[in-house]
Image 1 (cartoon, rainbow, N blue to C red):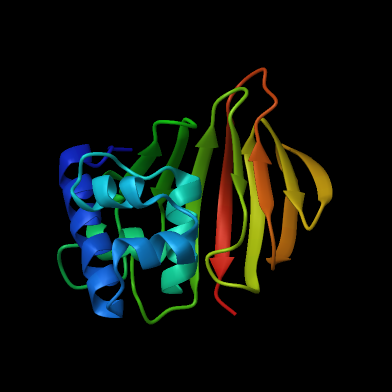
Image 2 (cartoon, helix red, strand yellow; image 1 turned 90 degrees about the vertical axis):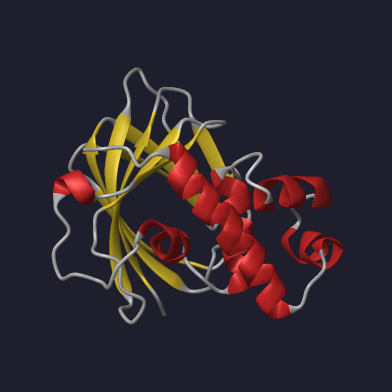
Amino acid sequence: MRETTTDTVGTRLAARLAELRAEHGWSLDELATRSGVSRSTLSRAERGETSPTATQLNRLCQVYGRTMSRLLGEVESESAPAPVVRVADQHMWRDHTSGFVRRSVSPPHMGLRAELVEGRLGPGADIAYDRPPVPGLEQHLWVLDGVLEVTVQEIEYRLEAGDCLRTRVWGPTRFRCPGPGEVRYLLAVVLP
């Protein structure tokens, strides 16, 4: 697996976030109110001075009605969508704050409703999302290696290698790796 150059994806992500806000005609203050992300963080993210955390990016995706995969697909792909994406060309994004690593497995295509994402969390990593990017999002979470604790609609699940959880997401979710090692999982995301 290759990791996408942070500068390239980060620069394009910053530009795309600024474009989306401009397309909606929102000020930074209005976007901050809608997303719950501070104005200063939004400003720094749009200028490429910092990369949003997974939680912040999720909030922005919710406001813009996109999944994280779709938004990142918009900035990761520079050419027309292909039916096959080779492992060497599958883009990775890292949330340096939480240690979450996300790899886009599916070839990016805006017209499709389903996508596959590989996630990795180190021991002790804990990510909480206050809402789904798209309400009613269907998720199939298959743990490949390690242990993952997931909370969906206030129900806690402990998933071990080989376990699969299917949910529809309407509210807060939480992903936590209790350790002792890393957890690696495949997430199938299906738009409602």
